[in-house]
Image (cartoon, rainbow, N blue to C red; front, side, top):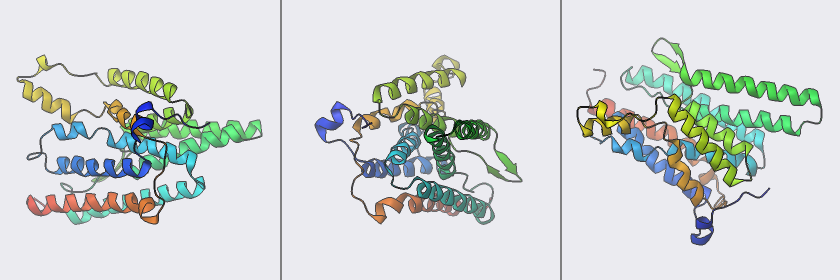
Amino acid sequence: MQQETSLSARRFGGLNVNQLKYLAAAFMVIDNAYFSFDTVIPAWVHLITRFVAPLFAFLMVEGFFHTHDRRKYLLRLWLAAWIMEAGDLLSLAVLGKKYQIYDNIFLTLAVAFTLIYLFESGKLADEKRKKVLFYVLGGLLLAAGYYFSLIPVVIGNFAIGLEGGMQLLSVVLIFYFFYGNRRKQITVFLIWNAVFLLLMGGIVLPGNYSSLKDWFDDFCSNSDGLVFLFLPFVFLYNGQKGRKSAFNQYFFYIFYPAHLWIIHLAAFLLRGGMG
């Protein structure tokens, strides 16, 4: 079924996948710089970047339905995930525990893509036994994904977990299962986000803080539950891929680890090395 596009996107031309990815990449740099230089970058920066990761998750679902080769897409994500994980381990050796890189959104996206790949395989399977097998495998992977989102595997000073796993896996599943009906996607997503916020303690009231500034800084720093902030970009999405090129296809796979290394190296050099 052809994906619905919003009236605003149709009226104003909207943004295609490439444009949304580059916009998200720019804000991603700002957000990761905040984590390494939080003493000089204000907390509200983290708040305005909450749309980045769920937007990438949403665009991955779009890619799942538009790619010509899902297996190749899946392999590319897993390859990028393990290369990134190796780079994170290297950063521990080079930069030390204080400045090591923990991020690996590729791993979360690879698990999410595998999930919907299994569910789609189950839906398309012509034998009941195969359907059940794919659905069971998908369910087990989902349970494992949620588990490792909360409790990473820790080996010494190195941890392997799913960055933003609880939020991103849920975004991917909701927008996959209700693909083709934007209204249902948004409705179910908003219900899930409201429940998620309640389960994680909701929004802390200013009265519990000594000053409004302290509350606002804490609110901004702990705003990962505000996943709904990416919804305006869903409505801006015009359903188009944008110009096809190797640069557009592989840009993020190179840019993501490169910008993290630059930021963490800068923090390492500017803030006292291994100290």
